[in-house]
Image 1 (tube, rainbow, N blue to C red):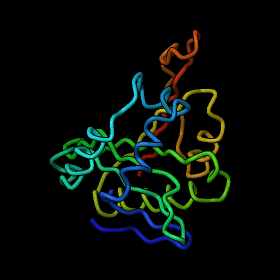
Image 2: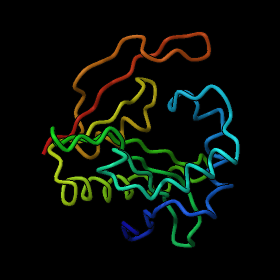
Image 3: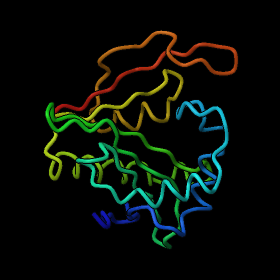
Length: 172
């Protein structure tokens, strides 16, 4: 799996030269709430992660794509996780660096990954977990006909408050 080509973006595998990008993104406290991170990652740990990112999705049950714009600048990541080939389902998560949001990259990345999951992984459904206050993500996923399937009450504890998390599904 090398790349998925869009009109304005490319979804590609992690490369060793992504270390600084990954280090900056993973250690940005803005994203810790959605990634359930509580401590920073070292470059050493992220380097090992990149080294092992070549694992087949059927083995690792997950895969991370880097979202790059037309200048080959990383603008975000889109993850496939909890891949279950027996039950034909997979989870999806997307992260865009704040300065690259609202430029259509998320729409194009989600469109590419939905096609990839249904066409190449042959899943029956894709799911996403989105906090109820993440209106940008809710709007993005609903644009692609993801439907709310349930609410996990008080699921995320962040900044001394609980947040609900909505389970969204797209069933083929």
